[in-house]
Amino acid sequence: MCVSAYSTAISVIFFNLSVMPVALLGRNTKFLIKYSIHVLFLLAVLSSIRLITPLDNARALIIHSDFILPHLITFLNTPLIGTFTICHLILSVWLTGSLAFLLNYLLQSYQEIKRLNRSEPTIDLQAESLLQKLYPKAKLTVSANIDAPKVSGICKPHIYLPVLNLSDEELSWILNHELQHFRNHDLLIKVFHLVLTVIFWWNPLLHIYRRDLDNLLELRCDASLMSHANQENKFFYLHTILKVMRQINQQDRRPSRCTSALLKCEPKSFIYQRFDVIIEQNICQRALRIFSGIVIAFFILSYFVIIQPAYQAPDTDDYVVFTPQNSYLVPTNNGKYDFYCDGVLVDSLSQEDLKHLPLSTIPIRLLEE
Image 1 (cartoon, helix red, strand yellow):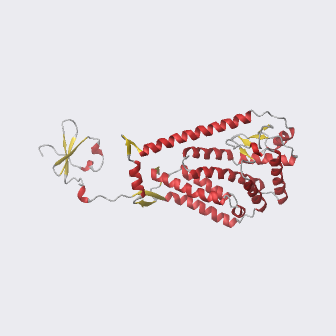
Image 2 (cartoon, one colour):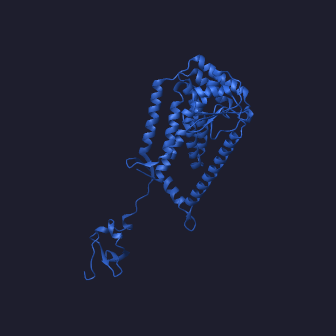
Image 3 (cartoon, one colour):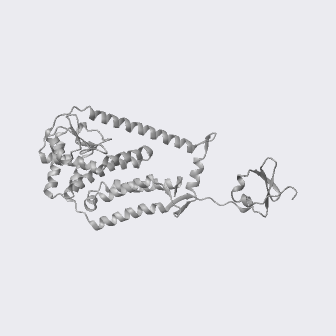
């Protein structure tokens, strides 16, 4: 398998087709209640894998494009200045945009880390004691300057907490929520999709996808925590989230680039959705398996379809077929060979040219012949 422009186009098409159901069904609370967040998360992961693995399968079904692709290729190869074509211009803009987005995200991440590191820490023996029992290797920072509970770190978790007035059980749920983000490798997933956004910054669906992915990760974290919880614990967990919301300043919330937070800069409708999914979750396992099978099949089949341009074959009267019967080679004094077809000199060839078909089958004649 190899990578071509056409296989890359198919991978982008597959990704865009996958983003739309993730965006639409991710906002459908009834769907999430019945089929869980996992089927959408599976689709999101496979679509991202497809985007970065645009492999060209030799056994793929080729769909010929007689009009759009040939005209598009002709347009892209139109020269602007010398050999500088429209394709070169687009690639230049693409690269410039990627660098601009990368610098922007690096700056925002640096500012977020700098803001967190500048937070004046407060000694919180309650939080330190509970975290020591839950995850002894985790680092904890409690400060009035932190806007919401959040976690950073890919190899080792670093939990940031605002100053909160919670009971031990309530604070344990908050700490477990942030640790669950770490166990789910959510920050690594966010970084990976950040790289995708930098590369494919021109695709508006990718920006929508990244926003929806943050919500999916939050719903997945809730689902992981509540997987074995009874109804009483679910209500207590939601009550704890509401209590935290009342104690933090929602107006000062900032987007999280390099952390995973309990509460994001999200509309209230998403908070309602989180609560509905947790309380009313009633997954149909059979339907979940069917949907998951369809998603996996769609992913695999996408490697067996490719779109390529189709061109009309030239008239047979417009070209000559070189064969050993109508062609021959004559060695010259400079080490090359004069190539004749039907007695007419066609070209002067080197020994390297004669190593490849069909020239390797052409007979060599001396001048006397």
